Length: 573
Ligand code: WTA
Image (cartoon, rainbow, N blue to C red; front, top):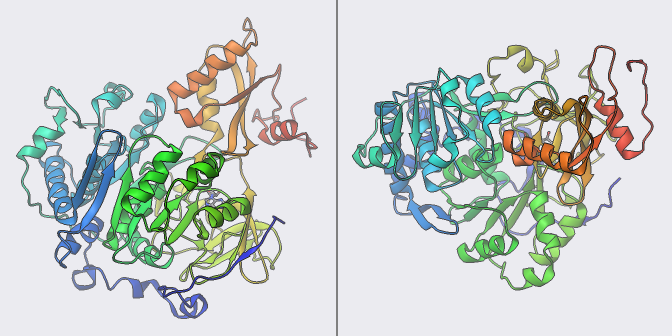
C-alpha cells in the first residue's frame, strides 16, 4: 500500500456534513427542485447557469473574471446573459443552428469561448469543445465523426481545420480581427454588434443532448461521449457537496473546457450555483498561478496532480512569496494524488487537498473526499450520495473489501453518458448484464469504504492529466514515411504521471538516429497534438505481435519496466 497518513475532518458547516445519513436517504429527484423544469417540465442548462441568477437579484454579481497576458476583464451574470443571448442569435440566424445540431468550439480560453459555449446551449444545439492544442488530424476526426454543422474558431486555429474536406460543416464563426465575411465565414465581432440582446431560449427535455466530449480509449479513434441536460442536476449538487461552493466563493478551476473537468466543473458547477468563476488564459507558469490565487482571493481551487507536482518542483521559496490565506478548499482530479503532494499542500497552503475521482463518461464526481470526512492520503475517498460504487470481477460480481478488481458504478445517475456518438456497440460494452458501468480502472475498497486507485485495466495513457489513446498516436506514427510499425505505451514520470513512449520499427532504407526521433516527435506534435507526441522513442527491428497482428503493448511495457513478459502464447512466431 501507499505511504498513507490521515488528515482530520474540517471544522465548519458544509452541506454534506453527515455523509452516511445523506447517502441513506438521498435521491437525485431531491436535487431537482432548484431548477425551473420543476414547474414546466422543460429545461436549458445555460438558462439555469446564467439567466436564472439575474432574475434572482444577482445580475450585477461577477460571473467571470478573465485574464491572460494581454487581457484583464470581468463580466457580470447580467452581461453574460446578454452576450450569450447575442451569441445564440448569431448562431441561429447567421449559421442556421437548429436544435440537436453539433456546434464545435475550437479556441484558446477567452471570454468569447465561454459566451459562445453558452450561446450554443441556449440555441438548443450540442456543444463540442475542442482543446486548442489539437492539430489537423485530431480536429478532422472529431468534426467528421460528429458531423458538426458549425465550428467556432479563430483565424489562427483555422489553419488546422480542413474544412474543404468536411461536407457537413456549413458555417465557421471566426473570432478575431480582419475577417472577410461571406456566406460560409461569419465574423463574430461584427455579427455580435448587430445581434439582438434578447433570445427566445430553446427549451429542452432532460434527455436532450447538451455536450459532446471526445475522449480516448485503448482501441480505435477517440469516441464522442454524449451528455444530456439532466446532467446539470449532478453538476450543481456536487458543486456544493464536493467543491463546497457557497454563494460568496471565488472559484478557480484550472482545466481547459476542451476536457470534461473544464466544462462540468469549469462552467456548469460554479455557474449553476451562481458562483464567481475565474478563467486564466495562456500557459502554465508557477508564479502566474500563485499570483492568480492572490489577485482574485481564490477561495475554492480545483486543479490536478501534475500541476501540483510542477508547483512543488518550482520550490518553497517561490511559494513563500505569496499569500494563500484566501484559500478555503482545494481539490484535485485526473490522476492518482500522491500522499507526498497532499503533505506539500498541507505545508504550503495549510489546506487539505481533496482528491476526486470521475471520468468523461461519468460526467461528474463519483468518488471523492469531502470537507467533513477524514482524508486517508492516497485514497480517492468515498462515493457521492446517490452513487453506488463497488469493485467487481469481470462478470460484474461484487468482490469483498481489500480485493483488487474493476471499479464499477451502478448504472443510472443524472450525468451518466447517454451515448457514444454513432457507436451503440461501444456504449453497450461499458455495462455488465447486471447493470454495472465498468470504468476501466482497477481499484480496491478498504474496510472503511474508502476506494484506492491501482491503475488502468486497459492501455489508456494519462499524461499530465490528459487522457491519450495509444491507438491514435500509433495511427499517426505510421503515417510518417520512415515508420513501418509502432506500438505506444505510457511509462512512469515523476511530474507528468506518465509520458508517452513509442516503439517503432523502421521501413527499409531508413536509419535509426536521434535526428529521426526528433523528426518523428514533431510529426506527431504537429499532426495530432503536443501532449500526444512521444517524448521517448525506441527503434526495434520487430515489434511483439499477436498472431492476428495486434501489437502487444503489454510486452512493450514489460520490456520497458524490466518485468516478466507473462503469457506469450499468442505471440506471433
Ligand atoms: C483517471 C477526468 C486516479 C482514471 C475527470 C480515469 C484518476 C481517467 C482520478 C478519466 C483520481 C481520474 N485518481 N486516477 N482521482 N481521476 N483519474 O476521462 O484513470 O479525462 O479513468 O476524466 O482518469 O480521465 P478523463
